[in-house]
Image: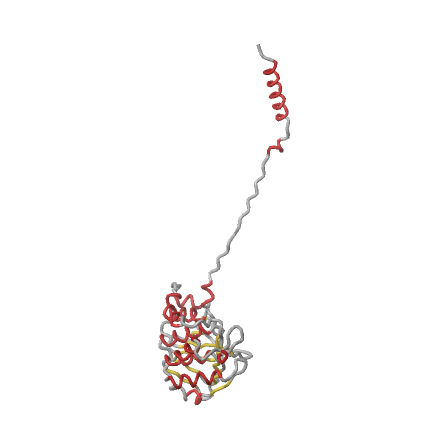
Length: 268
């Protein structure tokens, strides 16, 4: 015999079953929305060479960081990445037809590269990529070079030019200014046309302080003097040339001739 309480529970369950049987089917649907986040990774390798460079280089991988390791170690004693020597003209000279372009460098033939433009933090790696693609380059013609926006990179590049045994040339009508003069000094052989133009002035840091605003014993001065001695200037000439450049404010440029430069270094 069924007890009244058991009968009551049975009726309750049956009532709920009836309600569910007639409920709209839509009430039991579940909608799921999935959101996907996409992260973009940029490969900057294309910044270092023009379209023609891939053909000449044969698509080979270039370990640029390894190529620059020795030079970066040379510049680690002084922290002056934000200092600059830069004296732009209204327009840069054109370089004509080139086999390949790497930043400010235009490869003219297997032995000659021309330079027009400034030096940035990327320029040493562009130079390394160029030498990997064209290992026979021996002559750097400096057509219109306003200087550097990154002095640490500029001295790294200069030492790479010296290590590569390159000849540096300022041809007829050529103008090199500011930090680009350091690059010209790096040539194992230095040449300049009679009308070549050399513009010099003080470097400046990111706060507008110039060389003469720093104490005489600051490591940044030792870095420049050491570099000039590396490039063949004796100690007296190194100090004289450094003082000459810093006697002109960053906002101005003092122009020197080929004969002026011959007072400090041997020209060929």
